[in-house]
Every structure is written in C-alpha cells, then in structure tokens.
Length: 420
Image 1 (tube, one colour):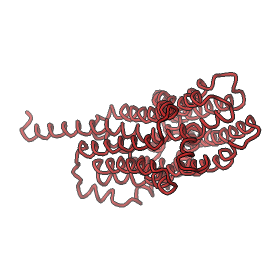
Image 2: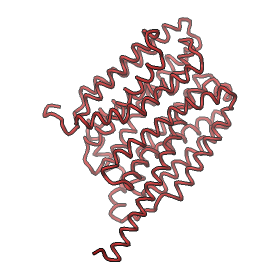
Image 3: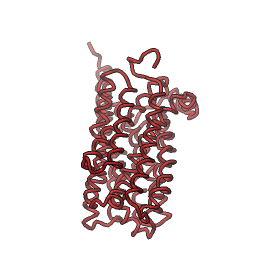
Image 4: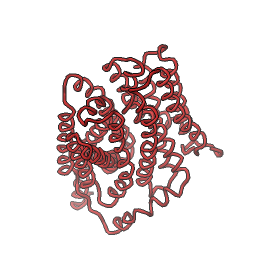
C-alpha cells in the first residue's frame, strides 16, 4: 500500500507536472509572439522607412540585428535553464521581448537598433524554454508530440505575422501602435509565466554540473558534426528568414509587379508551410529511421520550387510555389534532431543552444550580403526580371550548399547503415 508520505509526494509531483504543462502552454504563446515579431516587419518595410525616415536598406540593417543577439543569447539561454530552472529565465526572455517592442515603437535609429537587439535576445529563451517545460511536464512518450506542437505554434506565429498583420497595416494601423500592442502582449505573457511557472528545487550537484558554461559547449563544439548540422540548418533558414520573412514582399511587388496584398499572402504561405512541413518531415524521418533522405529530399524540393519561382514564374501560381517551398523547408529542423543524436546525452541541452548559435550566425552573415547586393538595388533596378533572377541565383546557391553538406553529414537515425 502507498504510505501517506508517498501519496503526498505523488500528489505534489502531479501538481508540479500540471504547473509545468500550464506554463508550457503559455510558453507556446510566447513562442508564437516572437515568431510574429520576427516576421511582421516584412509587411511594413515602406511604413517603417517612413516612420524612421530611413531607406529600406537601412531598415533591413536594423531588422537584421535581431539574428545577432538571438544567436549569441541562445548559448546563454540553454545554460540558464539548466542552472536556474525555467521560472525566471523564461519570464526574463518574455520581458526582454516586451521592452524590445516598446523601444522599437519609438522609431529612432538608436531605439530601433536597441529594440531589435532586445527582441532577438528575448526570443532566444522561447523555444528552449518550451522544450524544457515540456520535458518536465509531459511523460517521455508525449514529449516529441509536445515539441512538435510547440514548433507549429511558432510557425503559425510566423505566418500570422504577415498574413494577419499585412491587412491591418494596409488599412491604416500605424507601425508605432502595432509595436506597442505587441509589447503589451509580451508583457502580459511575462507576468503569466512568472506567476505560473513552478519553482524548482535546485540541488548543489545540479548547480555544480551546470555551473561551467564551457564544459558542455566544449563537448559540442569539439564535434565536427555539430558544425555541419548547424551550417545545414542555417543555410536552409536563409531563404525563409532573409527572403520570405524580410525581403520577399518587396521583391514580389517591385520585381514581379504583384499587388501588395497578393504578395503578403504569398510570403505568408512559407511559414504556413512550416506548420505542415515540420511535423510531417519529422514524422517521416522517425518512421523510416533515417534523417539524411528526408533532409536531402527537402533541400532538393526547395531548389526546384525556387527554380520555378525565379525562372518560370508563370507556370505555377506563386502562392502554391511558396506553400510547397514552406513545406519542404521544414527539413531545416531535421539537423536539430541530428545534432542531439550526434552528441552525448549529458550535453543535449547545450547542443540545442549550439545549433541555434550556428544557425542564426549564418543568417546574420548572409542576410547583410543579400541586402547589399540585391535589396539595396531593388528600388533603382532598371531590368526587374534580371534583378529578380539574380537574387534567385544567390538563394538557390545557398540551398545547394546545404544540399552538398546534407550528403556529407553523418546519418544519426536508428536505422543508419555502417557506412552512413
């Protein structure tokens, strides 16, 4: 029979699990908001240029700083959760995102850079925090499902950041008011997370094990496969973050002559495709017990979609192409699983921080390159067809590089062959 003490412990653990699940659900809203904040500037480039009194190129430079802080703080976030639990780190992340949005609403160069940097820093705590909370609240057999649901929330946020925000901006919503609304929403989420996330009892050995940030990251970054997986993911994210979520609408309007509303809907199809592609490709990979075929196949489909979009745009409606591209780009999440499988169990949390750092480091490097060579010339291009194709060649080359690395990387699925 269960003793009174054990019954109380079981009741306490059950209550704790419920608290983690509730916090995870709120954390998913945090993740949705940060993705909406990341993607929404794509539908307001012209409005931001007017509000900040800057060129679209300068605005893109400010927007790109999001990825710098996101990449760096991702390393800190993983260790913060291991050392302090979820209660304070995830609330701090939502709070930083709140302040970043409010600063960005002031429409000044200094506040713009500061706000966007804080947005990236706060966002770095979202996905890692949701994974942490899910691992504490759900039984092991449901964690993969919970993480998949978390990813879907993020992708919905990315889509709604364009698909829903676009019409509001078109109908007169000021960009300043938009950022105040988003900041207020993040502030509410911050308070909810602070009051609902259970406080964890951290023992001395846990603090000691997670106290040195260099130890787990030394393991992760001593493994060449970590770099390859991070590069693959980063390269596959470039067409979605740099093109679809930043420049895509402007290119479709200026170079292809598509109406603003239609361009917004088309670009929003990419993150909407993630909602389908991330869990679908993950399921297929788990089903066949291999990662590389799904990764290679997704990359190849991405290339085919962009070849059609940039070189034969009239053959298939752009909205269908962008949706198919979005579904295929769900392959960018496969390396997140592979890097965990390629590293020891005791550093899997740091492996997530490591791949976030590399992934968004790649975006931080290639985003300005795209802006300088293609974004800056968008308004002054005389041959828009040639300009559009040149941008497409750059993006296709990036995906091709990811495809080559996908062939080289070691297979980590449970059915991997001895030569993979």
